[in-house]
Image 1 (cartoon, rainbow, N blue to C red):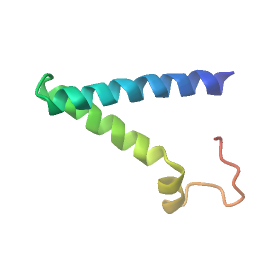
Image 2: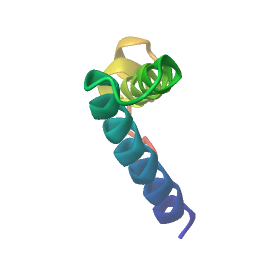
Image 3: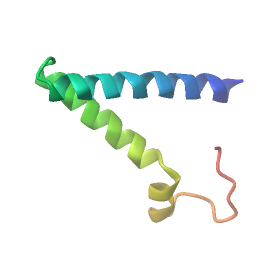
Image 4: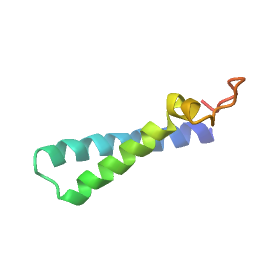
Amino acid sequence: MRSEYVDSIKYTFDALSVATMVGALTDMLPEIGALFTIIWTGIRIYETHTVQKLLGRVPKEGNDAE
């Protein structure tokens, strides 16, 4: 149950991030919106299984949470 809640929050922030990025690219939002998007996208990329594996933070047996 908790995992579904966390995933829904992530998806909501992902949607807001994309909307912010589109707005920033069309000069509709201030620079702070673009900064938020860059930070959030960086966090999401950092959380990926591939990056975590490259950093040696994923268990070798594949016991990841996702």
